Image (cartoon, rainbow, N blue to C red; front, side, top):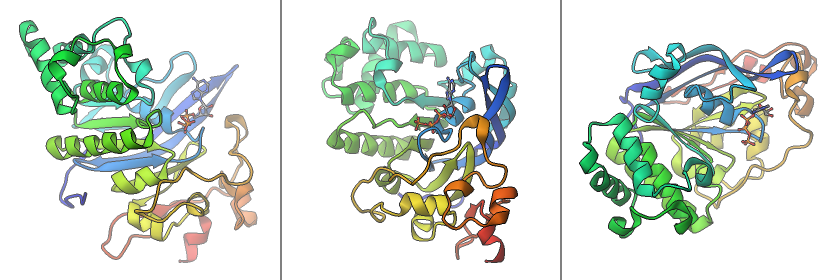
Amino acid sequence: MPLDPQSEVVLEVRNLTTTISIRTDEFAAVDNVSLSLKRGETLGLVGESGSGKSLTGLSLLNLVPKHAARVAGGAVMLDGVDLLQLSEREMRRVRGKKISMILQDPQTSLNPSFSVGSQIGEALSLHTDVPKKGLKAAAVEMLRRVRVAAPEHRVDAYPHQMSGGMRQRVVGAIAISCAPDVIIADEPTTSLDVTVQAQYIRLLQELQAETGMGIIFITHDFGIVAKVCHRLAVMYAGQIVETGPVERIFDAPGHPYTQALLGSVPKLHGQQGRLPSISGNPPALWNKPKGCKFAPRCPLADTRCHTEEPPVYDTPDQDGREHWARCWRLETQ
Ligand SMILES: Nc1ncnc2c1ncn2[C@@H]1O[C@H](COP(=O)(O)OP(=O)(O)OP(=O)(O)O)[C@@H](O)[C@H]1O
């Protein structure tokens, strides 16, 4: 789905840093992350396990697990307001209404003891002025919007009485019930089988076309990225190492990490592919290399890569669309 180039920016993240406490020390698991999202745009956040994708998503809603993590710096601008400056009480009003999250496992997002209708109704009553009497009818309407068959009956069902795909639709209904500007979808299809995955992705796209919401789509799966994302941000060891339009990154990845990830992945519009494994492991939080974080695994690294952190180099495409990567090799290009 092409994105209107005039589309306005809805979310702007600047220098977001989130630390994890280990004993008496704190380590940056999200390291100076900056990104932006336009209305109607889907931005894919990709990278290996542990690269900081989920923590980035949680930081945007100020939902990091407080016992272990802390948003230590940066700004998350939504509608001119820095969400990181809001009190927990103010933030509760924003969550769900302006920015929502869909998690990987619908089991953890739905309460097994309440009917799905009452859970959708609760979201609606928190953030909209639908009167109490009208909540059930509004929940039925939401279920219809996420293409749940026989919504008048399903509204009274409990989560365990539904299939995984249907539960994820209910989570989607809750997330969009208040027409948020931004949805963070963290591996929302991982627990679904391939056919249901495809249906769910189509649903998200349809809802996006209807509402113009921006989506940050966190995934391991480049097949899904090719289908749903307009732009990509590739994460490694807590940093974004490359950002650009999806086709551009598939055709001409700038960072050796992205190149390695794409190495054995089918081309755009090809069949689905998980991230292939790259030899070696990402660094531990407490043991990140001094220079480029990827240098120890990079086949192209030279001495400087091991000692000096590379800056960001812009390599826009011929239409001038933003594309950059954090790699010394781009210095001379
Ligand atoms: N609650 C926590 N306690 C301790 N460390 C954590 C916690 N949550 C995340 N981390 C650490 O922060 C880093 C980033 O984790 P994060 O879950 O954001 O990665 P990810 O890219 O989303 O991985 P995955 O794809 O496996 O979900 C990892 O090193 C992880 O071990």
